[in-house]
Image (cartoon, rainbow, N blue to C red):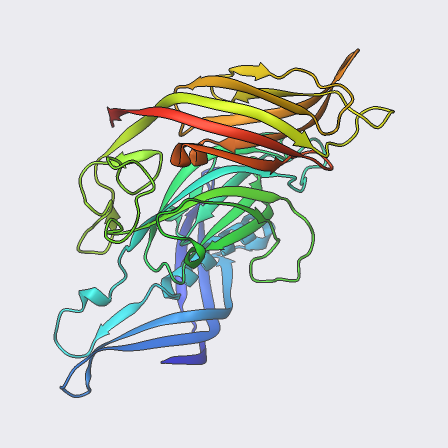
Length: 426
């Protein structure tokens, strides 16, 4: 049963908050109220009156949440940036505690209703690859972006990337894992911030992915446009894009799902192999998900890169042509090769192949840059950046890719992977 309702209360909750500078602030939270759709579930159905064993309740859809913050003995607004930071943290915690899929179970008749409680149903693997064309929040220099990712906005479940200084096109290539309790309704949120040191970080933009849009057991590669607010859809300003690789693995997915990895690999990510636990996730009696012992996987092998051609490159000289060549390199090892120069062409054909010995394929990246050769130097035309996830999974593929940083153009590549996993206990 779902009901639209209003709730207003006047609790007095005192929180002891410590700032980065070590200052302790007693903050009072009061006047909590919300408007939304309230969900009631009566189950299991039984023969005994009142014909159901327990009631579960949850806020199915929030429309508005209000609360008041006050520093005990002072004014919280006198500390720049602190009020909004504390309010956002408290608001997220309050919303998570009452919003679906979190639910409260009230037994009506004697019995065991542990199956109604919130439990892990799978694991979401996320690789934060990169972002591009971020809005600059600094007056001097460029923003120092970092990302915060979460499925539930709880401090111990939120993941934070490293900060990339002075860069509006940061490359992270970081991996995170999230416990999933309700794949049909939960979503992954990504927020990109500009690190301001001891001051409150400034939001550059955010995006989200619905887990119901992911095919279990299959890696999904997505570029998401950043917006100012996930709940307000009127924002049309371009704030940049973030690049993610996503893999959702339900518990027990070996039953009815095709393993995208090698047979000896279990069903979490390309980055780790689980030892023990057939489902890849163990569930304790209190509903928390505990990861069993893991082994790191070092995928070592040979990456073969064939630079086939490029199409519709932008002109770089006064004659409306260019003399393009390509530099192919690996991010971690720094190994690099370059093609020959094709003179006076915006549609060059190279058909050159380069082999790279890769020591850690799951954490390395392939970088391909296009340059215009000039008698007095060289001019940068654009680049493409790739993780090795797809070629490791598929073994070999041929595809066309848009050239980042160029007004036009695409690059045609053929990638091939030959690898042997090497295990080390952790």
